[in-house]
Length: 191
Image (cartoon, rainbow, N blue to C red; front, side, top):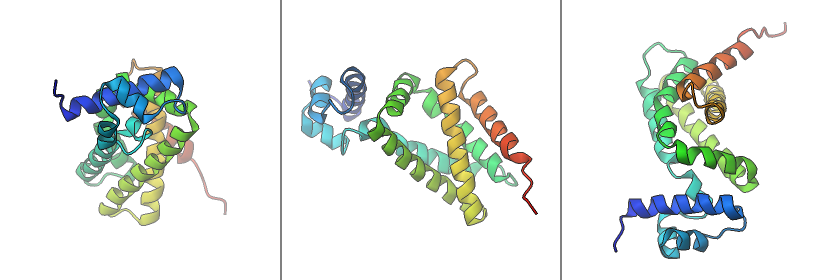
């Protein structure tokens, strides 16, 4: 029975997540994932370059959405306001995929190889957001600092949302940005 590429991709992702949770990341091969998903290894590699990337699918979509939302933020917004706007608008991407996002984050947290990939993806995400801020006229260094701080706040909010979903991801984002503001808002440089 022919299956769509999107269906195969989704089944590969779910098979990978299930196998990683059952056996562990290091004990699972791309061939194992393909077999569990009911496809051959060639199909796996048509969709993903390696077994780590299965868990990071959608990163390019999130990066593109954030770049768009940074561009669309209201004129006159501070860099922090731009970022909060962008992350709140992008929250639906995680919220719509919570069933996959929750175990994925737990798996990343316990697997060094995946944490390393997550950090690299986060750096790329922050670089893209920083570029968007520069496009709005924010100084290079401030854009980089704001983007990395904003990404850390987003990551913090997402983990809090996984732990406590009731208020919703947007509420966790607002709280995380308020906490960052409180943390750094009263800093007075030494003279």
